[in-house]
Amino acid sequence: MQTQLNNLSKLMLSLLTAALLLQSCSEQKTEPPKDDKFLITDSLISRLMIDTVKSPNNESDLSFSAKIAPNEETTAKIFPMVSGNVRAVPVKLGDRVSKGQVLATMGSPEMANYDKEAISSSAELRNAARSLKVAEDMFKSGLSSARDLEEAKNDYLVKQAEDKRSRAVLNLNGGSTNGTYTLRSPIAGFVIDKNVNSNMQLRADNNEALFTVADLSTVWALINIYESDISSIQQGDPVKISILSYPDKVFSGKIDKIYNVLDPDSKVMNARVNIPNPGYLLKPGMMATVQITAKSDNVLPSINADDIIFDEDKSYVLVLDKVKKVRIQEVEVGRKSGSKAYISKGLQAGDRVIASKTVFIYQSLKD
Image (cartoon, rainbow, N blue to C red; front, side, top):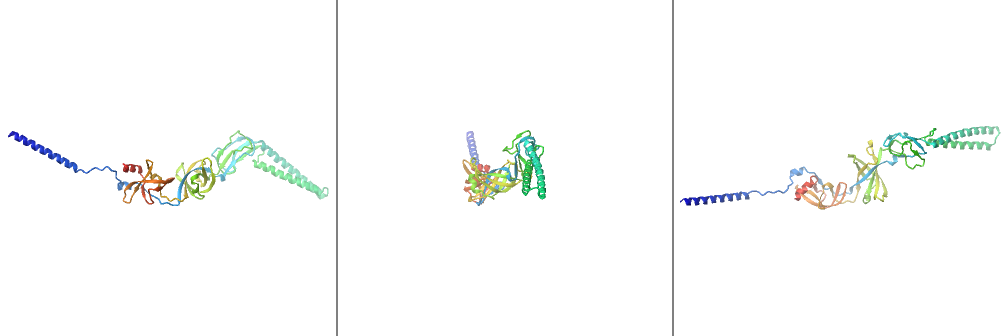
């Protein structure tokens, strides 16, 4: 009897264990499957920047490098007219000077000679004037002929011309009567180049300007036009100029001259923009970036170049469709200019593309 009870207990324990195992398997089967796929939610889309693919037009934005240069039409190069020894140079490179301000003084034997010639010519003119007066009186008294009077008049005219010449030479060289030669600025502006110091010996045939003074109220931007873009640039094209020193400021202008000569080494052609320079913010020698809106026969839609993702030598964008689903779209870039990319395949005007967090979203969707 005891043996039968033990066998019955074992049977009931086995049945209970089997029931628990079946219940456990049933519960595991009813658990929903996990989905780890990355999803773009409406909340995420609302925080993203979206760009619209722009329609093709007959304008193209081109980007070039440029250099700020002084306006040559308001720049003066100052050379010495005589030889001598430099005594003083009261101005320094970068100084602002007024018209007529002394830039340098020098002692010159030539200036002493000019003064001597002016004194001699004045004395000779006075003698000729007295001789002419005597000749006129004698002619009136009948003591001399008309020929004598004519000769006195001619001598006076010659001496008068010589006196004017000698005084003009003296004044052209500063008008000093003590052998001092003074260089003065012919215009108001800034000293942008200086090649002289005190105690230098100078020669009159020196071919290097001692000073260059420029009025910087307007300056030039000399643009380097690449050979491939020459046909796209025309006089009058509007430009926008940005300088590293003033990243938040844009200087505007128009191309007012195209230099139709190609540099044989750099293979670039220069174009010029005349820029007003209030406050003298633009300094000669500064480098600039120039955006030119040029006419073209472009027929490709465009997007911001930063919207493009490069992966394994291919270009992709993230397209947002009308139901706010994001897909990876391969594109082909026809050309790039500045911040724009012109798309030859993969996008159409009006398409919307993701413009922020693009790499993160691309990697999440790709995985």
